[in-house]
Length: 185
Image (cartoon, rainbow, N blue to C red):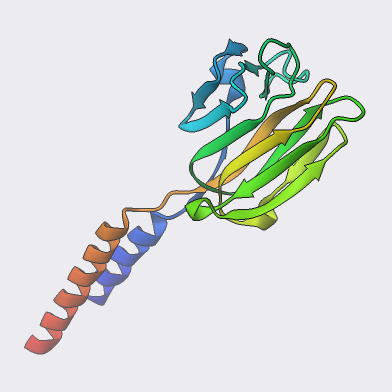
């Protein structure tokens, strides 16, 4: 009986494994899109109402994007990224910009709780947000007056969590079977 319990618990834990993921801008296709795109369930919104430029031309990176200011072909618009699920170990590249450009990145966690904000004024940096733990959303407040910023090479881990109710039901059933068998003995 205990072997069955251990095997069931191992299957439940295996279902919560972590896997590495990216946002596949290359597979999505280069081009200019509307004010919102969805890639693999991740929603990217130009909150200024302009278009989103994906691929070549987005600060020179083929694996990224920038949000275009309405009626102006510059990457100075604000952007919101909502991830399809909770992510951790998030990193990405900050691309392009001119002297005087600035972006504030706000990091949000579970229940839309603000985890912190970072300000960047220099171009071409690798941003590592792994210290922030579980992230559900990023907001890019671009206060640029030149070229603005592009964002690329998003990498992160996602937790593949089994249905919580299913795990609880399985564990309760197995404990009940163990208790029933013990009473018979």
